[in-house]
Length: 303
Image (cartoon, rainbow, N blue to C red; front, side):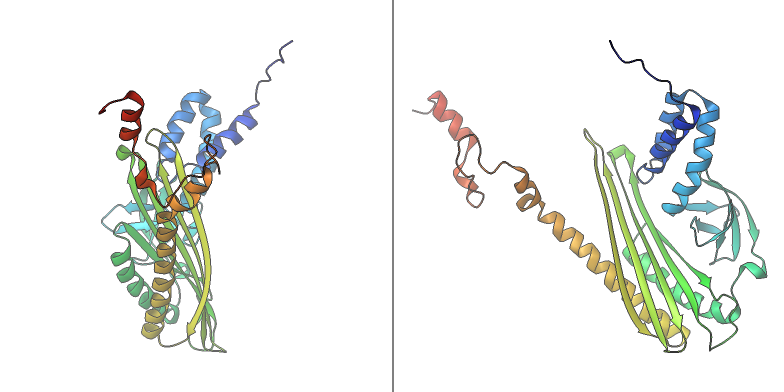
């Protein structure tokens, strides 16, 4: 006797829908949402799942939204979050009000003094932001970056420790060509006054999705640490940007090298050690094989 199918509860449906939304590749959550809404056929369940999943997705993917009023773009990140739908843009000292499900910025308001760092911290933050904007403009043509103060933002002068976070987000979306990709990096920089040292901790993440007649995804992560000397705002900014540039360039080069070697390593290992002929395939001398020659031989052509 066949087992009787059990109807899923609304809570189970919501959790499954959230999983699909949260695991959508970069730039594809709206496509996933559209299909989910059709499959669920229940607006209440979909709306509840979307309202919980979209904010998490937007912050984890650090999406970039255009602010109305020609204020530029704002990054939706955990570090700039003031309230549920409000995100600080440090460059313009504006606060963006975001509709997470529609992925648009609906309003903008000036940030209050309490929401901004002290003049002393702002001097370091601005100098670092200027250097990072130069770097991102060169390295990531479709990238954005922001620099936030996450600890010690009220420090008034030397003698205090504080922490800045550099966030870089870049996406290249081309669904018409069946491929999307993203780069995300987060750099925590601790300014330790006692020992005059800057401690850097980086988290880099690369994602790619190719889906023409298939479904291939890349999700690569890398963490690194470094340090440099606590100097003046301008000198510290130059040193930090140099460290970040070095580590990110090195990681990209290692990724490129590993994928260039795929045919000779990973793909080669996927083959069985011995084919049905029980003879090892001569990978270093493939020129001796010719499909045309073999067919001609079998059919007796050219004799």
